[in-house]
Image (cartoon, rainbow, N blue to C red; front, side):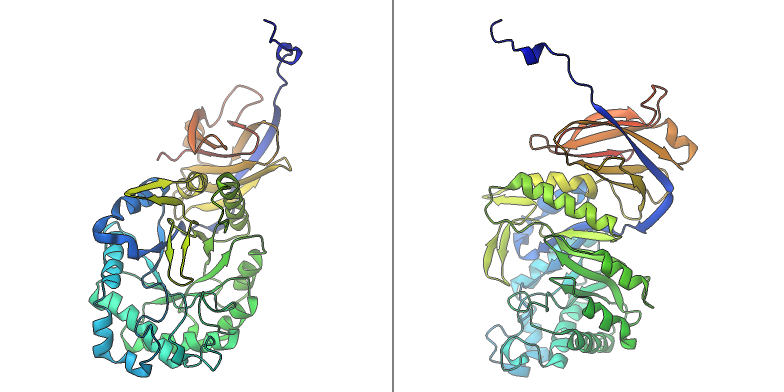
Amino acid sequence: DSCVTLRSLMPPMPLRQIEVRVDSRKTFQRIDGFGVNLNSKYWEGGALAPVLETLVDDLGCTLFRQDAWGKSDWPDPAGTLGKAALAPAHLARVYEDPVFANARAVAGWLNGRGLEPYLTLSGVVPRWMCAADGKTLKDRAAFAAMAASYAEWARKQAGVRFTLFGPLNETDIGPPEGPAVGPRDYVTTCEALVAALDARGLRDVKLVVPEQANYRLPYVDHILKSKKLVGRIGAFGIHTYGDGDAGAVVAQGRKSPSRGVPVWMTEFGDLDESGEREWPVAWNSVVRLLDLLGAGLNAALFWDAFDNYHDHDESWSIYGLIRRGIRMWTPKKRYHAVRHVFRFVRPGAVRVAADAGHPDLLVRAFRSADGRDLTVVGMNRSESALSLNLAVDGMEKPFTARRADVYRTTEELSCALVATVPVTSSNWPYTGIEVIALPRSIFTTTTIRP
């Protein structure tokens, strides 16, 4: 054949073998779960139910940060009522709005699956609650009463089972994400909210704070110094859409009296708005997720579940894991990419030591809560395929006789099951789990069956 080239006649180059050591006896943080930010306005009489089923049953989400209204001004969007907006009779009428009916339906669906949404507030507050600049929260007592009324409605009128509440969003940058609130005032606002919750019989509700756009350590510092907030912080929530030292927040929490409080990345992802960079967005999202887990975070929630209109900044968003069309919802590449972690690292799992053995390999390993299963997630960041031998130490003896599934995502493949291999083998030098890591690929090997 005249098309045969010299290169095609050459023998294939052997893959470089890399030994990856996993030691399940050396443990790090416990995993609380993974999930998404969720706009419940799209319930639309149950149209959202199949999407929720996909997120729970296929992607593996267990955490849902649910925002009902989209702004923190629901009792008085025009900002003209003043404190009359907080009158019980007025609030009762407000909570009859279809938006809150959708919120109740979505939360009820999640409760029916044994999941508790974590309720959150975002966006601007009524102008009369602000200082003269119209953006800095001033009337913290009024805000606390408004926020507590929503939590009370959700628990007592809507019948929602929940214990986590995120009252303020990205106050370090202010509108449109939330009102501007500095570290000291943030704490006094949270203290006022806790008092308002207690007065309504909601002493079991805990806060997710400080939910800043950046890693603003002074916010956490002041929270930790408050005696009134001891025992009322459910998680330290932070946000990122780039690179940063999330480990600094973890270390800060460990040095405090509240060192038992987990640290969650309650918003992560990528803010590309072109819609033309789906594979790079998927890749970057998993790099960030694995970096966050390596830094010691206990949970991560993607921003956001699906493409939708964001009320707080009054714009259409394409940041979702799922693309919305006319009567159609389609998982994107980023959905399949984060599935490598979301689906196979279950709540209660513990991160264990994993030595990648190669500068272009990023690897994280997790032992299941019962100690029976192991999941290893990695990325080959090089332009060459690598032959990996995952040698596992410290697992119980029955584990060594099992088989592991191997999943792969590339620009062409989407979390595809590509092999089922022995956990241990006598085929030297591949005595552990054998994985072929293609160039620029994401891979998961796991004994957990979907």
